[in-house]
Image 1 (tube, rainbow, N blue to C red):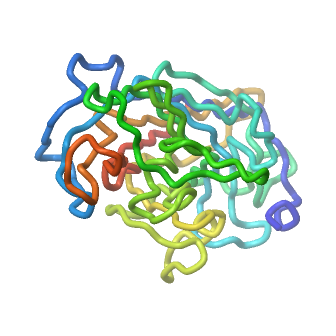
Image 2 (tube, rainbow, N blue to C red):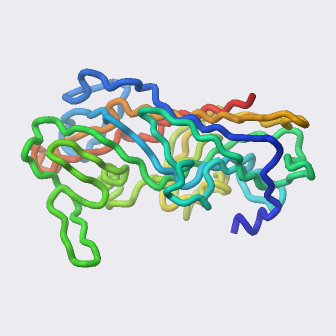
Image 3 (spheres, helix red, strand yellow):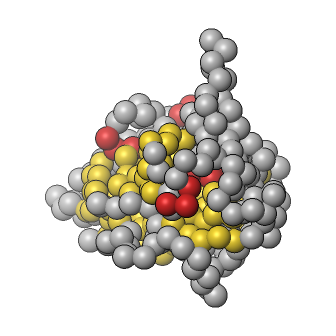
Length: 304
């Protein structure tokens, strides 16, 4: 629908968007696992006693779309949309990949839609990119389980494929375990809080708020950023950690580079709890991301 609505799309002048993925966590700290209580960190009350936190060795992501806009609503030929990760990209496209641990930089010619003039730039002299939508395929966390889980099978919704195969305890399409080394998607951690694999926010809309909350893409309150929230699947997290920028014309014969730094702080982002039986280091222990983990994202937008 969007491609039909904004069929006037052009690629602009000599304009590039540079996306920088990083984390304030440069190296893994010496003590990342244990009974660590942080007064600034939130905790769950429904999963039994808190046992400790884990800092992953690595966090990466595959994005479906990263889109900027200047408006809460869509108006044909008026609303500005700028895609730096396009929904038209294949999932294997390197432009979709983010490495928050080692850092990577992706530079693209953006796909631009809206009121675009004959020179390929927007008719308006200034474009305020007030809102940013980030839409995930998934995030991937690599980490070590605490040694207390040696030889302990962990609870997991068993995954049954079309051939009738039932995975062994602790293994699904959302998590793989090799001894105490784990490879888990964000859905593995969200399954408990949101009651099922594949649930929980996989979309984040930044800007236009000073608070953090979750809305449904199918049923959200008036005044929300409908142009982005409607793109989500299921729940959408609204986040305020965003420094926006007012774009100006690049100037004839000049290059403009708009740099977006997307930072994700994953220090002690995994929490684990004693589970329903409230006995530590047993089958039903629960592993989750910290409450409102999306607040660990910080977005900074700059133009040269």
